[in-house]
Length: 398
Image (cartoon, rainbow, N blue to C red; front, side):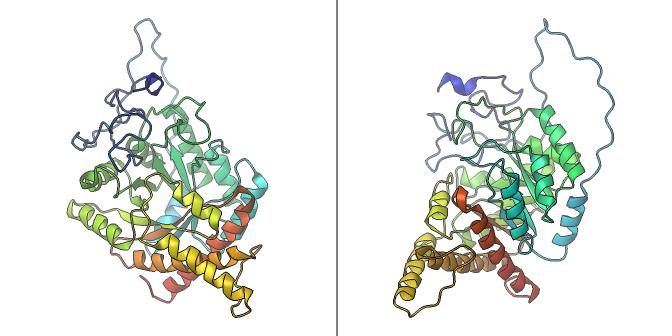
């Protein structure tokens, strides 16, 4: 194992061989053959029984030569996020449409434009991490910019870039901003993505962060990857995240409706009461198809991507010979216009299938496009959301 994977303090109770110092592992990045996301050995949790939730574990005790911390100033009682109350109320009435947020990083203008484009079509955006753009505005400021455009934010918060003190501060700020939810993830290792020069933190993992977020007054979601090893223990792992404070589970791309149905049933058999939001892959051009294929341990429904690209090519050929209409969206023309409409239709159809599963409380439109086409992707997400919400309003697909 490379020495650099073990740099930094090992969290008490965590595995010293896990590059992310996880206690409640494994993460969702386990390779299909059981390999670690970044280290040259199998995931250390494959042969370990599921760790039961037993509370937050303190970091290692400081060396005796280091002064003990002084008494802490009293903190105010956490104030529940107003956005969480609104989202819970909405979830009590109908399924929700959440979408990934495609705006360019560190670009307030792009954030505002994408938020304005998406606000009419989706209930909230999942604003989190990006492998191609690790440096983002701080989560609370980013959420403020998005919500200023009238769009609710479900903030993705990871453990890679901040220790528990910084995370507690962000959670307090996000409650003050009034986000709809906190999506608690351990996070990809820094050796993946655009900033391998950065040192990883991993003071906590997603289960421990979920507990902090719930304590801070948030509606908390977590992710599970039913298609990645150890497949037979993914449901049990979710149950421990619920015991820590999670209420919602975003289900990673796992192959379509039936695998999600089976995973929900397996969790229910163990006593889970979580609501489930499966990820729906969105493809509107070849760039967004390439991005999806870059996702770790992605499992698409059989023929999904090929069908979209083939249908798009056929539509484009029809327009070329004058036999088909041009159904391109804002800023969309040429061959990608056919892919766009085929991708929108495929996402709507898959969403209907997911929403028919008992226990599914919403869908997450997942993916992104080229950085210079973020606004076009935002318009497409809004169009998918509008079509799905029209079905919900008319009582179909639920």
